[in-house]
Amino acid sequence: MARAANIQSFSPQEFERVVTTAIHAGQRHPQVMLTAADQPAPYTEAAAAVRALYADDHARFASAMQRFAALMQLFTANGLGPFVRPSRAGTHASDIHPAVIHVAAQMRLTDSMKFPPKRFLAAVAEVAQHRYPEVDGWS
Image (tube, rainbow, N blue to C red; front, side, top):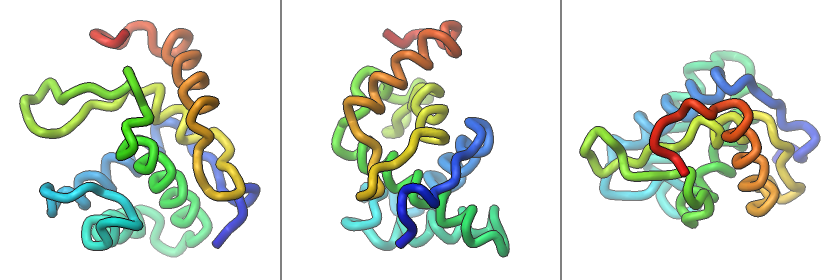
């Protein structure tokens, strides 16, 4: 597996597309959580959908999936705190604050390919305050 130093960053807009694509593909099995370790079917479908975004750019695809897996690890462990809420669409889905995507797109991963939880949340809080103050209904 690639070392953290080799994981590319993304613009927040590009990584939002990665996350949206992966989640929608993985939700073909909505009864299960979307993590690589626990639920291979949704993760495999998510990876296939993201792979289609990057065609022959293996390094970009690998970086996207590493970032997505690290983000989903925080999400499934309820590690995103006040930056996740029940969907306003009335489904069983959750809304994720855009600052989470922004930070996940650019923060350096640890050598174990994770986002450091405390540092991640601190960065999200700062980005939310300074770059997304207009986002409605978030504390």
